[in-house]
Image (tube, rainbow, N blue to C red):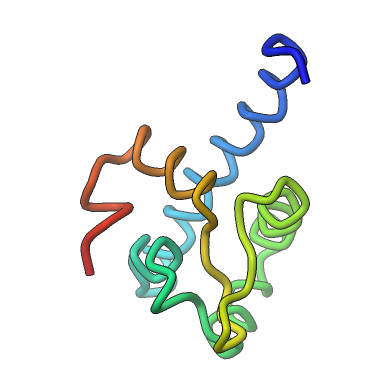
Length: 98
């Protein structure tokens, strides 16, 4: 995909990642819940977040773009792509620390 064609998708991903971080905080969670592959968002966490239509839309974008997936424990986590974008926007603490 040419770089100019990827720009809108990356903008949408960035918006969703920022929105996700905001909604995580609003629900008493932290970005590391999503960024650490050994943690992830549990089904219970996701049920609470899915009450918000904005979360549902962002989760769909994250999954369809390959920026998020489910780990072995069936918890939603960011992939390398999602972590890289989150790190660029929010710094190391949002992407690497527990």
